[in-house]
Image (cartoon, rainbow, N blue to C red; front, side, top):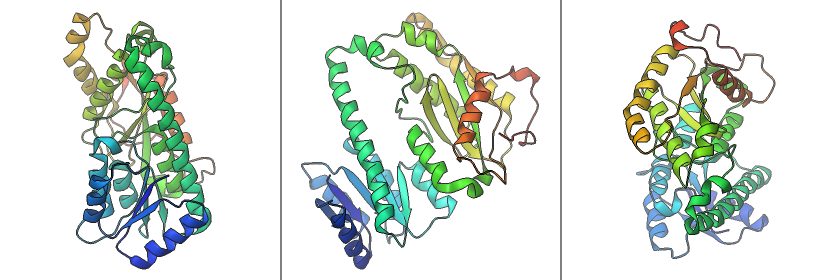
Length: 321
């Protein structure tokens, strides 16, 4: 695994290098600034497999560096782990929204780095498998619908706040229940997703999911959110708990967004998606289970969602999971 570690503290880079070496990661490169890191990325003929970025650096911080790396086509899905002394939720949110997959806090230890690098290796293994699949799809694109499973967590792009589902789960696990008291989850379900999947040819199903993600993101534009697709027609967003979430208004905005491209779908013989919106779900103050269970509760709520006309403005009075 080819790793690039970026930090403006030489002593920390030396310590990190020693730990990685003890874990048998020997192809490790170092940069002391964001610009130096970008220059190294541009020069390398064999792309890096993983980035370890410090958040607090002069001139260009790690969050901006993460955003720029994600802007490079060859690194849109490369694992990025933030290494920082700042564990406040605002910095964690910013890191994940710009594309980070995980983070560790300083001072670091060997065990935590080992756990995070195991996660990175898992992502790389999945990406290798996906790459092989992509080559097969390029040869016979019309068979994509047969190769792709309906419950796959398809990684989508190009919608505001969109992150892979695994990254969203990891984000909640890292925050823990206490810091999640300021967040809520809202589910969105494409009720005719299975029908669309059965009819889809080539990339049509994935294109529909991308269109749906954009519609949901636009409907949540007044909310600071993270949005993800978990498979089986289910989307889920994490939003601030203190925000005023009007479910009826969001459903109305989604309906208008879908209507904007429905004519194009129908003209091409495609079925437009029909979405349900669930009620916001939260984890309680004394919750001891997995922080990710509010995602499951939110998606379940969307699958049995009620018509928007029966709803009134909610500020999470009944939002408990």
